[in-house]
Image 1: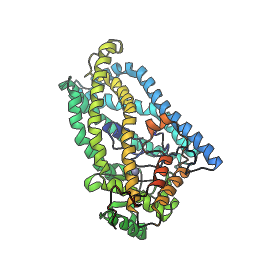
Image 2: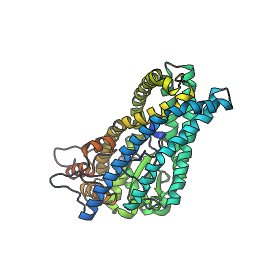
Image 3: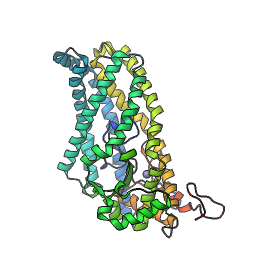
Image 4: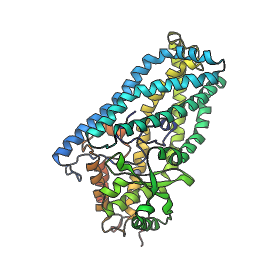
Length: 436
Ligand SMILES: [Zn+2]
């Protein structure tokens, strides 16, 4: 499915296993939209405003339209489950070997159903100047992410159907127990194995040692020594025009990544704020907290999936020629439920994301106190510059914001930043001592 935020940005998310299966979700951290107040802090010139509004209509339509399209087509394709299962049974009597036919076939069908929206999304990104990635390069990325999706998905469905066969009533509980270490492992290996397949990373110290020195001052102010080898520069400018930065990985793979577009588009003070925000994610253990938050959410959605699967197979199984939920003929139902429940898990994951993004904003502003002349201005300017470059709609629909925004709106962030000075008399910083 398509991110409603950055049509052009496609990175694995680490909120839930459901999300790790979806290669087209936005990353932990990306730039944002703003909301109009009486006197908005970030204003766009008229031509950009018109483009920003049109782009938001496109991305919203694509996100909800693609979800509706997938649900509708999958619902009608559920009947294909029985012939696909019969085809798989011709190759082997063993169910786990049958899965190596049925699961990739279904995942190819799913990827092809999703392809028109993905193509349209890239076309829109190019048309609005958000993306600069050529079609051949985009197709190469799409092929790689689809191949990973099919490989990981086949593995997941093999485990899932083994559990369905051996624990038909409690499979969802066992799957949840298996999911947690897998999710931790996926977050650990993603920056080492997956991310380098799509972008080039190099230690920032190799290209901009002076900036690393500046960033180390921010790290030291936070009582932290982030090894320069853990701060990476990503060559995002080959694909997109807007700036971004993010924290990813876990333990030995944990790192801060700054896009080269950020260095090109932001002033030194804005870069220090952006970096301070990312350091906030790092210091406040937001990756680990995101995983911890997802643990009960995943359990709930697996339990709900088990109830829905059982009910659909009981009531509609005869019509669809599905004899039992553990038969490979039910795979279409499971993929339909995956799309449906991923859609409904989105606002839950985004509410958590907005919460930790706000914490990182607070930290980012506090940590650059004393290092830049005006932390409030640095934060506000950084948000407004991002809004211009990403063509954020200043007046997003409230429902769309609630459902799809992984960050508070730019206007909310800028409003908060403009008025947040915890060093004023009677106020107190949240993460730092008021004494120098
Ligand atoms: Zn962030």
